[in-house]
Length: 241
Image (cartoon, rainbow, N blue to C red; front, side, top):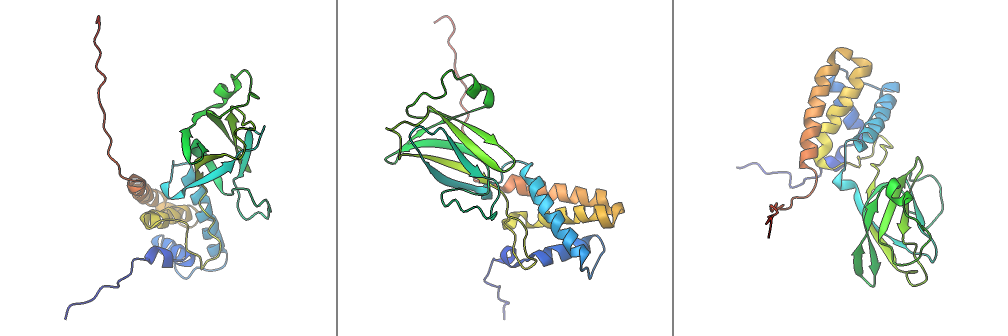
């Protein structure tokens, strides 16, 4: 009689924080950890998630939202932290950066151009009103702001800016939680935590753990994203014609 399969594919969601910590400690030769060893591992996992944000764009953390435009208001605020007790019902939390945006009028979108600080500073009259064509993003410690140019006027009020943004990876939280990480990143998450813990508890394994971690993280980053076709067409020049 043939063996049956489990019929499920939910290991990453049933793989709790305490199991991740246990597996990482086992990789550096420690078992039966408790107390401060658990707390320092959870702290290291949170630090590693923040370090991942410096590695580039994580597509599972890309989300979409709208900003309702207000007459005469050019700058709109999103918050980088979540669960901080702020009661603003219209606020968006956990925003790390704005990737792209469009001006939306009756479900008709007009793409906006993202400009840097120097380009925005060079605009001569920042209070000019009209349909926005550009936006400037500032990333502060506690918030992210998006400033539009032109400034929306009465004709644009009530319309929206539809934008895609990068969310922050959620904190680890309780030991019984699952992580805010897709299954593709589970191997490098455990390897990365083992590397962090080796620095504290088994320094002679640091280099080995780092190599394993970087190798698995690189594979996960290459797999992340969405597949699409790309076509490159050379530009043809006809001089003296």
